[in-house]
Image 1: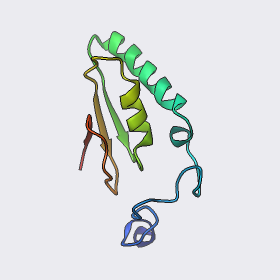
Image 2 (image 1 turned 90 degrees about the horizontal axis):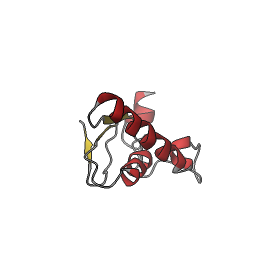
Image 3 (image 1 turned 135 degrees about the vertical axis):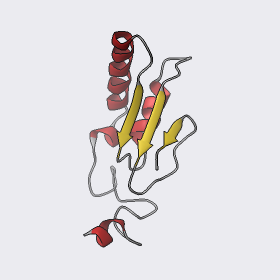
Image 4 (image 1 turned 180 degrees about the horizontal axis):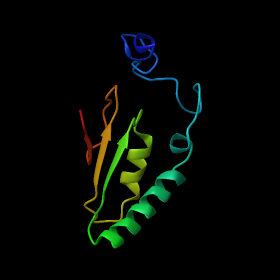
Length: 100
């Protein structure tokens, strides 16, 4: 299973895994930017309760659609730290840190 999923040519190791509207399955975070807006709103509430800007970490970010959308939904001037980790790291836009 390890080799089939993550080895050379494995399902998740492909440059473009078959995930999304045209692929094998769709998750809420890849289907619509509404999930990212809801995440951003929840983070803003958390900021207020903590009295500081919260960090956001996503494990298993896949193609990074959710992290990218959360980045785009940030309030202007926000210094939120967005972090992502995935077993098969893929490039993410500036403003999102990849954890290895």
